[in-house]
Image (cartoon, rainbow, N blue to C red; front, side, top):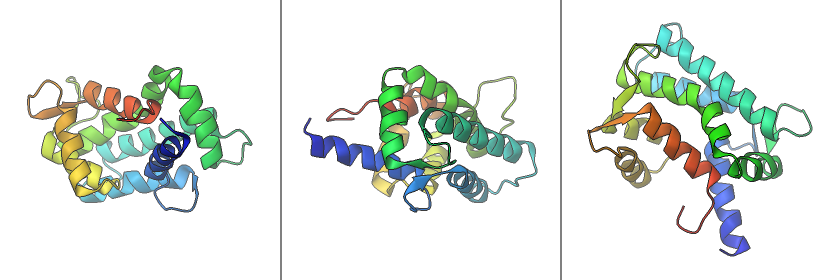
Length: 178
């Protein structure tokens, strides 16, 4: 892959986190993503699902900042993202999966209308995950294809494990077809 293609892919992944488009990733981006998901699925911030989503967003932000915010200003610039979140995590995708897991678990629970701490692992219908992806900024066609491809066991639902594995691969594997 040439450097222009690599840069394009990195920029796209950075933009997925930079929800407000201000040129850096910060806590507000994670909180905004959580708020949009709650609104989309008619869930209040004060209920268990809402609280779990905000807690997951904070954990995800703290994990991202711990890996990528090299100057400690509580913002991750594109350069820091490339240096930390991409280069470091590419070598250890499981680390990225673990910092994303609480947010993804809670987001799936919100989309499913389920208890995020229930006895069963969270899963949501493919259509609900597609809605969530759109709310988080994915284009309609991409959200549709992505949601269907996340259903690796073809049971019509996206389980936490499927979402975590795909999310980790998307953000840590920068290849021509990734």
